[in-house]
Length: 189
Image (tube, helix red, strand yellow):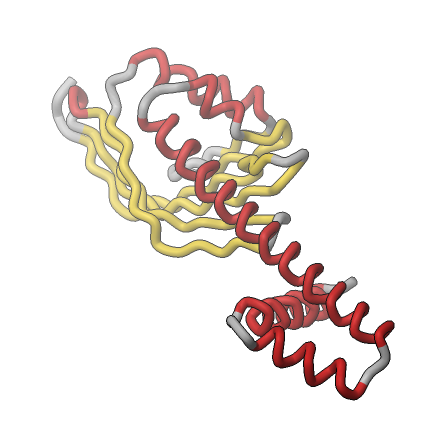
């Protein structure tokens, strides 16, 4: 099924679910349907309503899992919890840091980030700008991020985009890309 067809199907499920979720609306729709249809058609209508609720419940569950996964990703990096942070990444993750260096694969990302987790002398903060979650498939968030090493009088601000995929019941980071906005290199040393 192509993206356009998928979007139409999701829209139809959402519309059906909205009708089912409104008190009285589902009963009125079923009653109207029952008065002009056979029992078999009513059963099909009821099955579609149940399927719509199931799809909506699954989408909500995925959205909640996504929210938790992205929060864990950002907070574990901030809090120097390397094991938790790495566990949230796909083995084939690609990381493009703000200065343009590219790391491909979990081992490369782990090696490049190791000094930060050992020294624990940097400060990391973020503000979410926008997000898009496509059911239980992919999620994408754009952040404004700030990274600083106070003892070196060094900091930078970047736009960081993180793409997640849903695999085996978990959201995993597959792409993390930063674009440098501003950098300060002080004279401390």
